[in-house]
Length: 133
Image 1 (cartoon, rainbow, N blue to C red):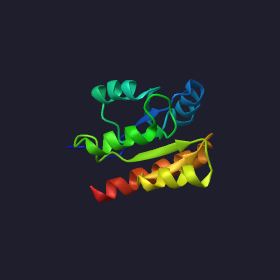
Image 2 (cartoon, helix red, strand yellow; image 1 turned 60 degrees about the vertical axis):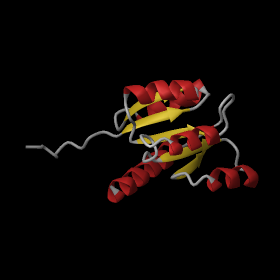
Image 3 (cartoon, helix red, strand yellow; image 1 turned 180 degrees about the vertical axis):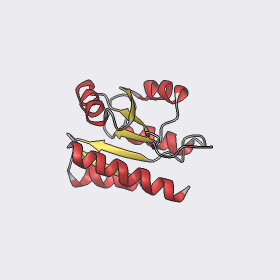
Image 4 (spheres, one colour; image 1 turned 135 degrees about the vertical axis):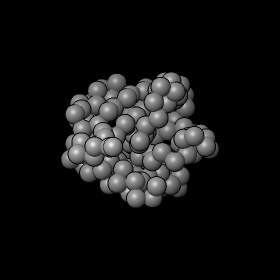
């Protein structure tokens, strides 16, 4: 006997090498989502071992292992391939955006994000993903 009056809060994993941005995004989403953070690919895998997110926000340009490489690893992993991924990027130049979009993410957003735009994109992506399940 499930009680559907209280919607389940989505689990969001935010991966970015900028601790200030991570803190800001976590504060923006606090209360509406369960937010986990990681500053690198290895930390992301640690978080994924703890809890599978409903959506991943991924920095496209990170040192060591960039977001594009991490995206391809997630998409190639059967256990993770279904999770929607939205890229964060600080670059709005055509070359970067074209490369990012060629990977076919579920969306992308320029940094720094506004709370209204971020929440709208998250809701749109999460709702679209629920419809396809």
